Amino acid sequence: MQFIVVRYAEIALKGGNRDWFEKMLINNIRKHLKKIGWTRVTKIHGRIMVEVEGEQDRISEIMRNIPGIANFSYATSCDHNMETIGKAGVELLKTYFEQNNKSSISFRVYAKRSSKDFPMNSPKLAGELGGMMLDQFPQLQVQLKNPELTLGIEIWHNERSIVYLEKIQGMGGLPVGSSGNVISFLSGGIDSPVASCMMMRRGCKTIFLNFHSYPFIGEQSREKVIDLVTHLSRYQPKTTLIIAPFTKIQKAIKDNCREKYRTILYRRMMYLIAERIIGRYRVSAYVTGEAVGQVASQTLKNLACTEAAASLPVLRPLIGMDKSDIIERAKEIGTYPISIQPFPDCCTVFQPKKPETQGKLELVVGEEERFDFESLIDEAVENLEIITMESSIQEKFWD
Ligand code: ATP
Ligand code: MG
Image 1 (tube, rainbow, N blue to C red):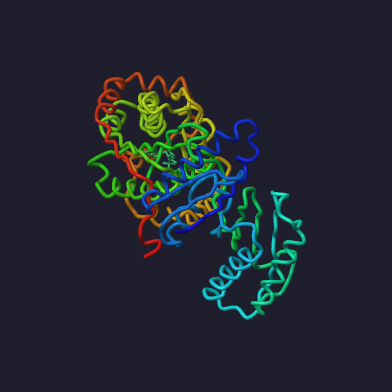
Image 2: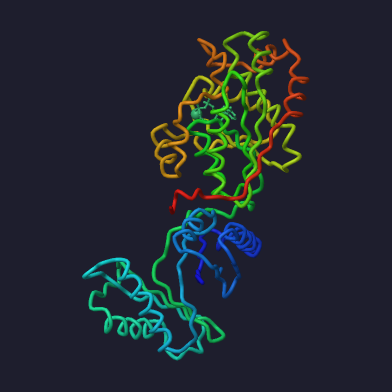
């Protein structure tokens, strides 16, 4: 049985809503861990405590990817007896030195006493426990500022205390769901998975929407998008991917509209399809992977033309980032190797040779009037492919 103490950062700042945020995080942790085995997640003493049966590496990998968790520690639950507390500390350090072969390491004890029933104050307790550890482990060198190793002891009420060793860094942010629902426009590229991850980290439950132009782009592009979404599914308990057929719309645009407007029109049609889905998923905003000036369709003028088709705010978390920074982020979150697989996106179909970079809304709308897009949108919405998946981290991470 693993016993884990979870710490959260920003939720603590949420004043009157704190309870609501905490409940959401507790629920999410429960759902993320349930596939591991028996799990209990409770709030004790202003902390979230997790009890779970399972392998530590696997649990850590899942916990590190749950938005809202600042950090967490594997802990031992004790009573208020100094001897039991000392024993717990020794056990933790013994395991640490078994796993890390070190002849010398800087060390301190961090003590927090919330129950005044305990006879020692925090500095005294830290000194006492530190002394017990130094007696047993000659490798430890006391260093109060920035030590490599901190043994934590928290004295709670009702004869309870916890002892823990390492703080494992979580991803921070807010629990998914606490900021509402968004639709993220996901191509198979590098940018949109990064944008999606950033918004999940800010508490947005993310529904992924991809546009696919079969047979102009093949099955492999579809598989690539499914792979990306599967990878991103680690950040939220449940994930929905919607794949919308886009072939007929692209063909109609090619056959009826001026070539240089194609990409802008594709984008506007994407929003118009998305507009039909927002009610079903109670969506409050869209997310895209756009950054100013990255490609012709992302000039300020063209962004204005495309988002005019949307009734909801369009969130663009990458808007001011350089491609090289986005690539770094994609590598960090692990989507990069999937994104660079060379399978095309629908936007490459009938790509204009000289795309418009200074789109004017009235001219773009004029182009749209040249074909019956409403019936094509109806048809696309009737033929959506919807894939749902539980949160998952592929086995390769620990096999
Ligand atoms: P990406 O931004 O995905 O890495 P990219 O920069 O080549 O690839 P663009 O063609 O510039 O992508 O598209 C900009 C944004 O439009 C994407 O970030 C994505 O949010 C959205 N988008 C593009 N193609 C699609 C698609 N086939 N399905 C859903 N959204 C798309
Ligand atoms: Mg891009």
